[in-house]
Length: 156
Image 1 (cartoon, rainbow, N blue to C red):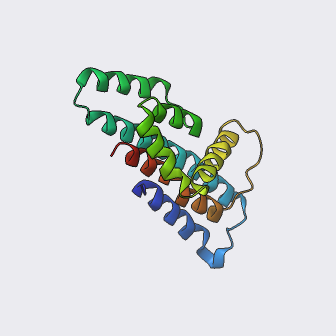
Image 2: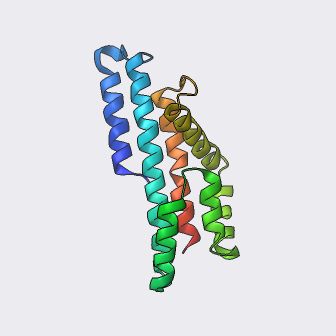
């Protein structure tokens, strides 16, 4: 699932970096934009996964169950692949298998998702200097956002 806010931010960042024949690429300005994009992308993916989990539960038409899941997701969901997988698996074998099946179609979906999250954590906790480019971020995002599609497909 493409996220319009992320797509727009990527486009605008590229536009700014390409000014004056791309003289801003590889500079501190690009690094700041990359840090911003990592936080934006991960936050947007987390929100999209939360919404998708709740939408999947709404199909059950059980208000109490929906309320429980909503509270659980709001309080305990963390932006990492293992948490996403645990939440999906908690809904049963058929949903977990559908999720895993979707992800098996392209191993880069999970690896790029994990790379975005790891780099976001590095930025947030100032563990190391990020060496990615905007192009790297775009490539990771093109695959990572498919985790949201995998969650959605699991509930179909």
